Amino acid sequence: NLFFSNSSSNGSGGRCSLCPQSPEVSFCPLSPEVSPCSQSPEVPYIVSTTYRTAYHFQPPRNWINDPCGLMYYKGIYHNFYQYNPHCALWCWGDIAWGHSVSTDLVNWIQLEPVIEPDNPSDIDGCWTGSATILSGGQPVILYTGVSRDNCQVQNLLFPKNPSDPYLREWTKAGNNPVIQPVVPGLNRSCFRDPTTGWIGPDGLWRIAVGAQLYSYNAALLYKSEDFLSWTRVDHPLYSHNLSNMWECPDFFAVLPGNNSGLDMSVSIPRGAKHALKMSVGYFDKYLIGVYDLKRDAFVPDTIVDDCRLWLRIDYGDFYASKSFFDSKKGRRIIWGWSQEADCRSDDVAKGWAGIHTIPRTIWLDSDGKQLLQWPVDEIESLRTNEINHQGLELNKGDMFEINGVDTFQADVEIYFELTSINAAEPFDPSWLLDPEKHCCEAGASVHGGIGPFGLVILASNNMDEHTVVHFRVYKSQQKYMILMCSDLRRSSIRPSPYTPAYGGFFELDLAKERKISLRTLIDRSAVESFGGGGRVCITSRVYPAVLADVGRAHMYAFNNGSATVRVPQLSAWTMRNAHVNV
Ligand code: DQQ
Image (cartoon, rainbow, N blue to C red):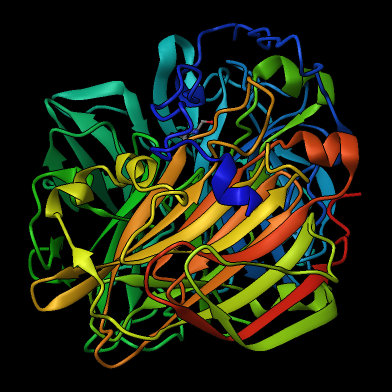
């Protein structure tokens, strides 16, 4: 049993705290420093083309970050994104809007950037924004422009030729900026990332803009009749004190238990709830509540002061997500930016940095409390070489090797069935404050009552390198809490990558349902996992030397808990390369 004998006794692997190079790119200094990779005598410095993803979204070269202005227009999906046309770093003053188009959300064609910093209202950067399709079908874009002295304003863009389904050329409005940072108490360097517009009860357009105001953070509310001239509503859509600035707010309607999406520019049916998402600290968090039409404000169902307890869209390397209503298939789709977790000098050497996650359908669970996400069906068109196993039984310490697929490019779906729930250990609610810490303490080598069980992926022959995605089941008063971890602490023998143990909790009614599902999409340096039918999602970036040097890795299903778990169904596929901006 190589896996467990090689792990340290406390399961921490020695690298648990957030590493000092944990990324903070949105506020990088005027000329970003290129940090040298720390060298290790045993492990050669590697800049490998093998880390480039095969089916995730990324441009051919250079830097990308936030998805902006996603939309479906005249039969074409558009992805606009934060892009540095000059190099693989986020550099002050360089950020433009890249643009790619697709008919299936899988294969993409890169077009010319639609905007670059070239006038006083965006001379230091064309930052994040959103697209809205107006009532007559005309698309428009609002984006944050950074003018001199880091003054952030909101600018408008129109397509030059709306009959071009590719929307290749855009014009900046003559009256930009259309919104200035002129609110009492507003920090004008923290006023950005306008949402997609929606129509309020009075028939006027609304947008929200992320802002820091006095000592609190807010999604400021603006309204307009024509999308050209905007007035601030005298209260925010929602605000909160004691957290970092809310970047990239997103506001959308969802129906409990119904995975059809809702279009925010038409009237929203009764019974709908609303989700307010904000990118804050290193994570995308959200609140579920109602949009109170009388007060024109978002009211969360539960007020939780400590924002460490707010639910997250993804518990891993995932930030600045944006959703849109896909009118082609009647669903809401979200995706986010996953940044490199290696040092910047490697990014410069390989010539690219940043990917977008697989687009995910997003909807509200039937209990109305949490969002669920699942990779869009289209991604299944890349599946090939299917393998299946049924009726496996995993006792404590068992590892079952999954052969027959390309372990660097795979889609794996596995169900774990609990044979008994009596062995569940008690849940400590304080773990919710820091699930990463708990994943470090309760790593895969630490035996438990029910779990850990899950997948070991990207493993070298001697287990020097491996990444583990696993679950543990805890009993909490009337309910069961499931911990899901994506533990990267041994994902690479190289010292430079950032290798935390990410984690999140979800509730499951195990008295009714004894199965816990895990779907993991492996794409070279990207690993996206969906636990409990999409209740907890974790995106991770990994740089194993096995990928660069050996070109072969192992994958296992395992159990290291005292209770036996069954695997009624395990399916895996090799994933073909998509045509992504080639
Ligand atoms: N990235 C953009 C900002 C946004 C941040 C700048 C979030 O508009 O707040 O590239 O990653």
